[in-house]
Length: 117
Image 1 (spheres, rainbow, N blue to C red):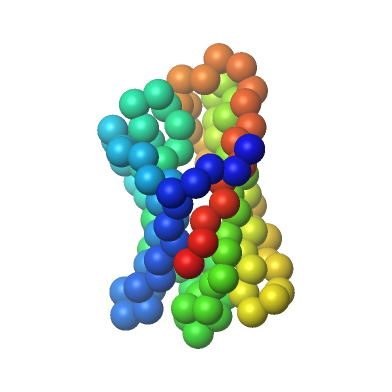
Image 2 (cartoon, rainbow, N blue to C red):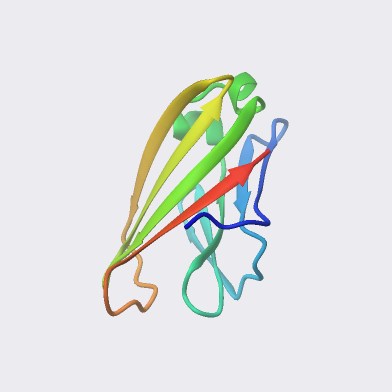
């Protein structure tokens, strides 16, 4: 089910894309240019992508025109997979970000979060 109170921002000068779901973060995990914010229950509460245009292969002009984004998070016992889809001027672009990080989940769970600009 989609979550509410979400926010997506792009800082063009710094080339940082941020997705935030309106929940407090308890910890941040930095994996290269990706910073994953995690809440107290071990769920992704936000994601920051540094050097976003390069990492997502989307030019900065288009990143500045994101209409909506959705993030599907699959939690498994030993890793998390994040799949992000963007809607930019009526076009869809999907990106999969497989991350090997254990957030303490014992069973597989899937979560869908929708962000709006």
